[in-house]
Length: 109
Image 1: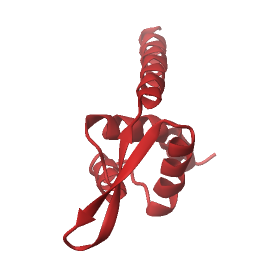
Image 2: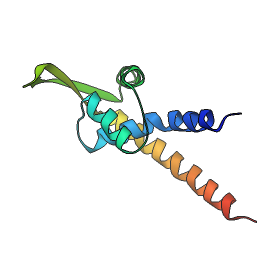
Image 3: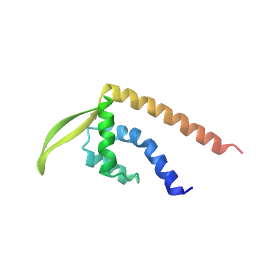
């Protein structure tokens, strides 16, 4: 088993939650989301992000609106819906539980 594959799978497992966290702070354009992920060493390409955003929108966790751009065509900005906020809350609770379990097991001799 290769370490890099395992690490990549771990990052993918948290991608939905992290994407929702980013969007929960303020509405976001996909390239801004990708930039934020890269700045935090969670490298994601457009080919991963756009299908994820579509899935989250289809699940009614995200909505979007179009904004004019000074450098080209209008851009689609995403924001969390009420349902998305609830889902993010549940994911965050689950994450905290997992984090606590890992920390507890790590401390056990």
